[in-house]
Image 1 (cartoon, helix red, strand yellow):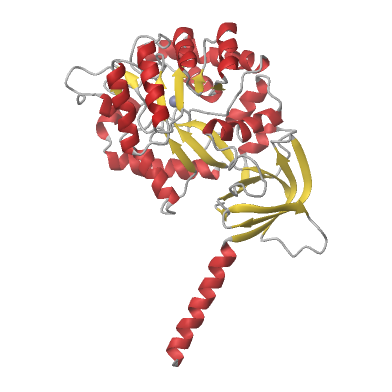
Image 2: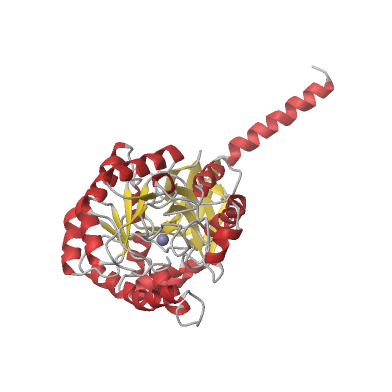
Length: 426
Ligand SMILES: [Zn+2]
């Protein structure tokens, strides 16, 4: 071995040592919130190996120094947002931008939004409707370490019926928008419903999103009418189950909500006009509610600005927006399972944690709000053995804040440290 080879060998050896060290991380947490037990453990030593928590034990005086010193901070599991739209962010220009942005523009935007989401402490999101399957590529790029962002479970394009919420051609004159079919997520009848679900499988989606009723931001008359018939819902759900997909249903109105719950969707998003009958059905079928209070608040505020929305949207925003919070309060009080979701992409990405204060204002304790964004969200994802707690064997996602969020939930709006898959991201 000549000198050059010795040097190269030495450098490689050092590199190998560094890589193996990078896979191990010791974190000293002043306080660890355990949402599974609704408890707090003080002064803990957390050892991370190969992207998973390996040890959680009391910190001892003789413990070797931590790689990440959070001895004066509050640590909690990485936060999970069950309702995002990372491929866009709403503004007054949103309807025009559908005609000016190329798929690559949307993709670059989504990478920026993903970084902001991760910096806000959200290490996992469920994306419920994109354009151009951008979030499938974004998910893969993040997994491969090419782009910073949360772990993504995506529905890709939402499924809608003709003229329904998430029909991308709504509001435009005939011929202006390309023809929409099951491939583009617009379907009519059970056969097309099956085809639309299978197309999502082919596109690489992780789950299915349907728009069971009208919605606020689409240029269509009703924000709450039922938009899927029972045979269409059954076809979506049966086909989804063939591919191991769960199904999330956007729903404001009661009839559409009722049909979707009975057909077997896993979650109702928004749930605006739910009543006691819907609450009973949700509890019977084990359906989660993802309240998206932030979106309700946001559209209510924007509806007050003349000209911000097209007139048909402004009317729906002013009617539906203010009702979402009281629907959540009622469902929570009566014991419906709640998972945290913001609809970010309506409000700005990176402000996801503002949802916590709204959940607490409308009846949750801070611990319950944290549970909604950790253990409950993991359960709704079907990942409760991997995500949502800081325990040996779980994926090493951890965030830290400087103030006690159990005393003031807005502490979660300033996340200091983010670790995802055992790697410090912030
Ligand atoms: Zn949404």
